[in-house]
Image (cartoon, rainbow, N blue to C red; front, side, top):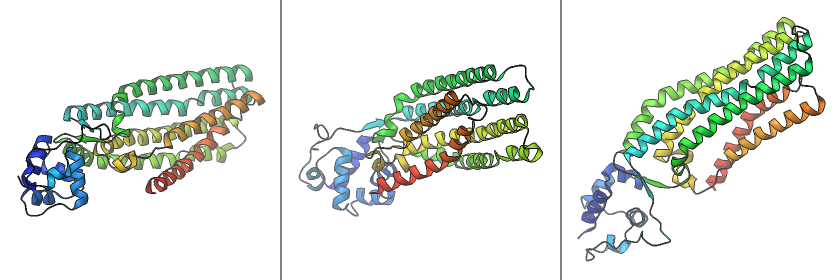
Length: 330
C-alpha cells in the first residue's frame, strides 16, 4: 500500500476532511490533495508530524511493504490528545456567551462599589446629610463589601460553569470533523461586533474623566459636586469595561477552539503569568486602600487610591503582554 492510500485511510478513520487535516498540518488543502493523489510526498518534518498526528510509526507511512498500521500513541510517553466534538464545541461557546455577560457585570459592580462611600463621605463633610462622618464611612464600607461579595459570587458561579472546558485553554487538543470550520465561520461573523464593542469601550474609558473635569470647572471647592462627577466617571468607565470584557471573552472562546493567538499550541507549552499578576495587582490595591483608610481614618480622601490604580492598570496590562510575547518568542 502506497503512502497516498495510507494517508486517505488514516484521515477518514480520524473523521477529518482534507481541509481540517491541512489545518492540523499548517499547509494548504491543495497540498493534502496532492499527497493523497500521489502527486507529491511530504518532507521529513511533515512526515514526522503526520506520524504524531495519527499515532502511527514513520516506517508505516514511508514503507509500502508495511500494510498494517504500527500504532505508537498507546505508549506512556506519547499520550493521545483530547478530541473535541461538535457537541462539546457548541456547549463551550454557549457557556462562554452566557458567562461573559455575568463576568462583565461582576466587574462593573466592583467598579461601582466605592460610589456609596464617596458620596456619603462628601455629604457628611458638606453638611448636606444627617449622617456624621464615621457613620457615613461605615455605611459606605458596608455597601462596598456587599457589592464586592455579590460580584465575587457571580465570578465563582461563572468559573464553575466553565471549569469543565478549562483544558481548551491549557492543553493541546484535536477537533472532530466540522468543528474548526464552524468556529471560523462564527468568529468571522462576530468580528464586526467585536471591533465595535472595542471601539465603544475605548471611547467610554477615554471620556470617563470628562465629568470630573466639568465638576472642577464649575466649582473646584465643592466636594459633593466633585464626588458626584467622579461617581459618574466610574459609571461611564464601568460601561466601557463591560464592552471590553464581554466581547473579549467571546472572542477568546473562538481563539481557544481554533488554538490561535495566545491559545496556540506553541503558547500552551509556556506558562502565563498575566492572570496571576492582574489578581495580585488588585489585591494589593485593595490592601493599600483599606490599610491607608483604616490607619488614617481619612475615608473622604482615600478613594484616590482607586483612581491611581485604575490609571496605572492599563500600563500594567501592556507591559505584561509585551513581556509574555517576548518570553514566549524565545
